[in-house]
Length: 89
Image (tube, rainbow, N blue to C red; front, side, top):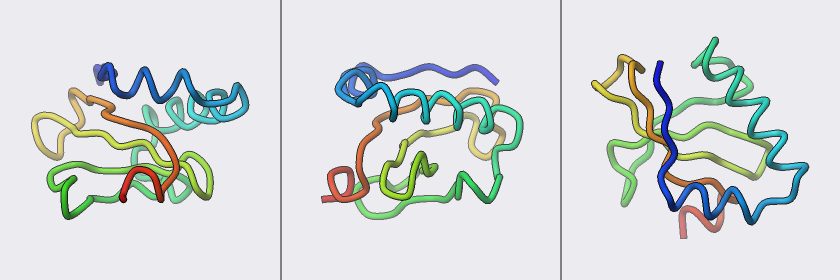
């Protein structure tokens, strides 16, 4: 799997505390090896993020991504990361 990060993701990631950056890095490793782990709660999104998916970083923080080709996870683009309420407002 090849993973890239959008500029928007990088900006949001850099605003996170080191604690949450470390937590994302842990979850990213898990995501690479077990994409549908219960801890990640990998799920599809609706509304303005139709065609995107989300994983849990903590109970409140989420990372939004899209996989290509669809449902194969050969190539993944992480779009944004932040709290649930900020991402989905």
